[in-house]
Image 1 (cartoon, rainbow, N blue to C red):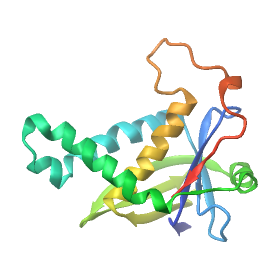
Image 2: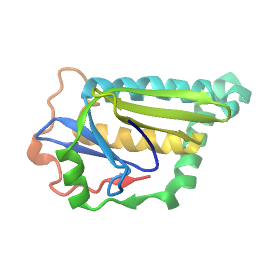
Image 3: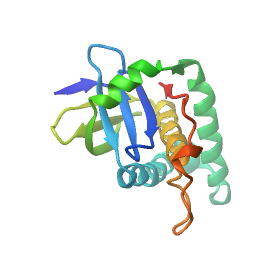
Image 4: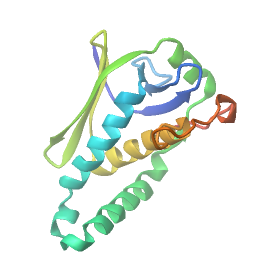
Length: 175
């Protein structure tokens, strides 16, 4: 069953060494999944390039200023979506992680002036929704923040932070 994606929360769980993706947490149509390091890093790498390549602002900017145009667009998107951010109660996140399934794939495709974000688990269940460019950039920023918290952005061979260094009461954000 594919649910309508209305909200999304990411939370790194050190004991699993995975990121929980809680979709519509606390609602009857809730669904959750585990994102592995491999999937999360691949999504961030490819989606960042995809966002940049589909940016009208970046395409109109001179070649030497494209990076700055993309950064400006991202910062504007983060500011514009800030009012939609809220805290997900820890007890809801605890339940979401208890019933999460392993994510099989996360796809992002262009749909006119918006993007279709689809997340599916190994069972075939999942969530999908059409999001605006700025909402997609917020979601990617949230995922990037949790990936950084997990220490997955460290250079190869660099020591990972100890699990004890992770805050015991993380402050997940929901869009």
